[in-house]
Image 1 (cartoon, one colour):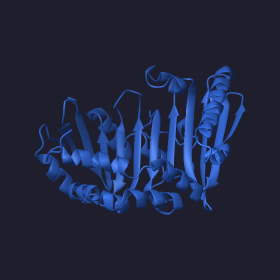
Image 2 (cartoon, rainbow, N blue to C red):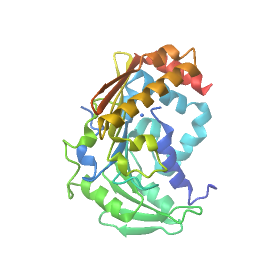
Image 3 (tube, rainbow, N blue to C red):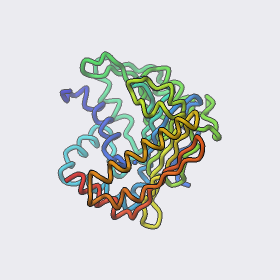
Image 4 (cartoon, rainbow, N blue to C red):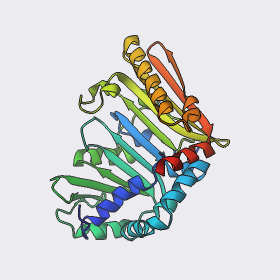
Length: 301
């Protein structure tokens, strides 16, 4: 996609989302009232937690080195924000499993006026509701799709359609019921996690998306660092014990394949632990942060 004066701000928003991946009680930890009541899945990255961890700081340093200077300067020009310093969290969620449908909420020190100034001249731009600071813009290229956005306090909310934007904004401002605190979707919520993922009703996923995922009813995963160790903690719950056993066998197979592919990294993968009880599978992996950093650096090389 060519970079034009119209597409650049949109690309910059996308770069903010992928600039600091985590492979992803603070005000930027996941809160259930940030999610729509009918949310089916979410992905949350706490950038503040990353900055306070050995692994997170290493990832940020690698993504903000000299070779990324032009990209960082470009993002700052279009958003008024230094993402490696001023972006505090990213929350992405969906109320279904449709392709390219969902909501993304970026929390950080944005320059709202600068972003709107950059977007105002773009084809298809429209200020939808000045009172609620909502906007629409046509995505560049051949997608024939629109992007909807709103600003609320220090949040920039992006949505794939107007209905999702209105619901996200109403949830954010307390005008709509949020996801209940005891929702199964939040069963894997971990305090202080750099990265969290949760999903329910996975059987509703389209067949082309992930047959293995469809075998589960719900799943969760979190990455936490404590006392110099990185822990990956997660769970998968199936509809019945037969499917749970199939998932358990598949996960054991993936662990074995990972160990076979790298003799050097095999001891790290060996630390992964799997346990099945009925329809429920727990998995954990805890290793020194330095070992994870070495593994990631070896992979990049």
